[in-house]
Image 1: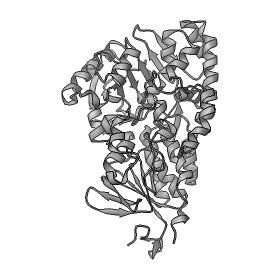
Image 2 (image 1 turned 120 degrees about the vertical axis):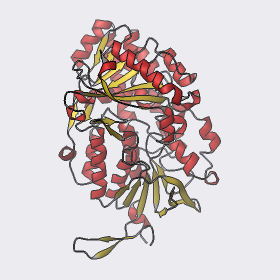
Image 3 (image 1 turned 90 degrees about the vertical axis):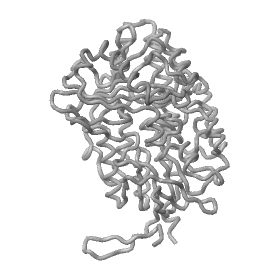
Image 4 (image 1 turned 30 degrees about the vertical axis):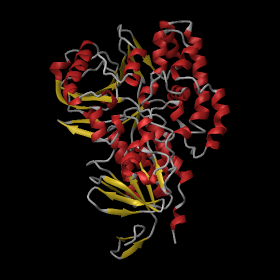
Length: 513
């Protein structure tokens, strides 16, 4: 039977021909699931193919020893992007998902023991800034004003707009120049804020999307205003609840999510994507293919070289990729009530450590950490009387040559000691569940090129037009969503990449003969 048709049962048991054009989506991360919902709303029959045994991609959920560990994204901002998806499926987000505001957004612990609670409360932020450096309060206000201006252009006007031609890029250059997008995040922050600690507080955000504050374009300072505008949230049940909700939307539209279905290659005929071949040998035909797999991995391993003129092996290998991540998930047999939902523990070095991670590709002796305690908001994610955590350390990607089979436990123990000395006293005796993920697993299990957790590094020369396009430059009817395409990584970014499809993917009616 043609890939654009299938026979399905209806309520009265009679068979009917389902003739909607077929869209195949590779990968069930947030970008892939959002793309599937949008395509379903536009008349496509959608099949999402996931290589793992559960949906989510980087937002996979680990369950062990009574604990629920969200594997990846833990910070939910711009909730209206999810509300839009639910609305497209004729439902309300609030009917399925209980989003709770988190405050402080982040508790920042400096290496000397001083803390800073990063919040959405303007007066509270002023008080804390004045405590560290009174003269920086006015500078912070000017920085936030600049962040709002960048947000108005970079997020509200450009995040969902495709950059398919040089002219698309040329049109925004004047606005980007006016907003100083040629500066790095740290450089722009330093223009307004003079205290060294405050510069770190205001510039760490690119690390949440795979960027080095000292090389990432200052467009990403829009995150400061985005968080101030909409807050930071956490869904009850964990981010896995959002994944389950999106799968429910897809199935409600008549689409499906197939698990344990790794894709071997994208089938291309006469320059057009015509479907996919699974590792099992099964071939699935379709009108369009959308890849939510890592963009570099998609081109390098899922598309034969003869079909690629733009994203050749050489171009991919010469590109800059984000850092890797070492993630330790652990559960404790006691509660740590004084530990915030999100804590950032800054190490003794800032720029030097980032140079080692991004430029030198060296696994340093020191580190900075992001500690997530979801049970601060949702105790149900751990057994009664227990706490669940994950701690993330930015590390070099696999260009470092680190043998993670040998290093993983040594590195985990170093992190354990640091946490025990600071925010989690008695940790070593309290651990009752543990697992780690290294850059090697990001490559081998999650198909992340070079183990880079966020794909292409978000420097200016790899942004907008210069990233892999949402509509493939080489292959007709192949589209990309997720961290590696425009606008970039982070949950708002990958959801926005799916929104771009509304512009570049033909309506389903286009394929009806």
